[in-house]
Amino acid sequence: MTFARMYTTGTALAAILALSLLSACSDDSTDSSAKQPPTAPATATPAAPAAATPAPVPAAPVLAQPDVTTPADRYVTLESGNQLMFQYYARTGLPLDYGRVAGDISNEYRQTTDAFRQRDLLAALKPRIDASLAQAKNTSYLRMDFDLYSSQLSAYDFDRKGFQLEPFKDASSFRYFNDNNRFHIAFSNAQRYAFLPVADEATARLMETLRTKYENLVVRAYLFANDADTSNQTVKAIVVRIVLLDKKGRELVQFAGPTTPEPVAAAPESPPASRGKALPYGYY
Image (cartoon, rainbow, N blue to C red):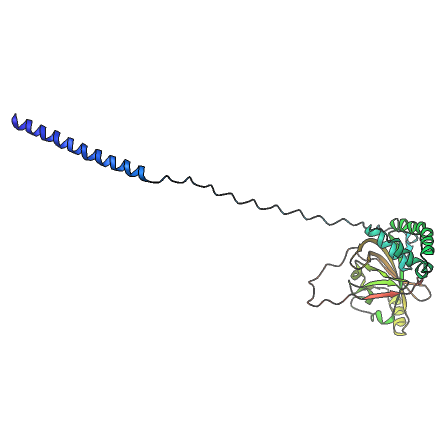
């Protein structure tokens, strides 16, 4: 009994000692925690700005297209640079510079240095200028004649049965009139007419004879003006058809090619410069 009691007492003493040690450890831990500096609150990382939505690319304007069945008498003869000037303003919608236009259409206005005379002339010319612009806006079908020199007509191609026409080979070429060479005209589907089919042998023989005799021919181009290039003041027109005439005006052959441009090939490293062709004033 005494042993048992001694064991119990020792166990109690051991338990008391263990509790004392545990309490001391707990106090040390509490004191240590109390001595630690407070943890700074976490700072939120700002979200990255959302990527800007790219602006939609505006669609290219849909250009008017010709009615290929339009009769020949509906086409207005194009024979001066001043007509081209009004066609240019009609296609672009740009505001008219009345003073500049008056100088283009009136020698007297351009040559006088009298300010009052210029003012009076401009007042008189304005109705004419406005009427010419209104007419151009209502006129898209144009007929234009120009010389085809014998050197611009190839020898007859027996394999393809036709002739090559040099004026239509270069898509970047343009034409102008000498009375007002600030404005030009270019054919958007020119290369569609670089080759002229002539299957009829009698016609081909006649054309070959004229070519070898160095006789020039006339190209009559039926056009539809539907656009303009503001970088070089050029009216852009679709060739609807062409008629080849001899110098006496007799028809040799006619051809209606596609109204769409030739598919664009890869650009050469050094593209050729544009070549302008002058047309004599009043020639048609």
